[in-house]
Length: 165
Image (cartoon, rainbow, N blue to C red):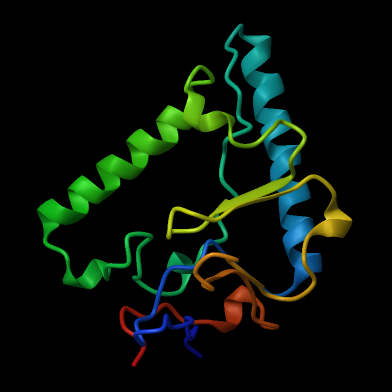
């Protein structure tokens, strides 16, 4: 089956930062990612490389199921040059998150287990306790876009689709 992304008020499908079966799956994934970060960090530290892996994203976004990018464009509609620029911009943004001196990266603190930013640019959300992560799909208070979409389905039940509809 195809993942059916939510639509905005204009009927356009949009990018969702977290898409997974349910809250239990999300928590398990976060805990697993934290263990992997710790193992990688320990390995790097043992060879005198110190990198803060805290800004590493959850990586459960909707692009696993379709070609809708965070900027709202469909990858299938972009030229090779546009896609190359998009990827370059994303890599630069992620690299910049590892720069702890950047004031924009201090929106969240180190105790947070999950933080999300809405593509509208106005919604910043974070959770410090697993119990406080929403049990139901979660929307941005500013624009109403879904930021956590619990589908009730496992990832393997979906086929990748360039266009849905």
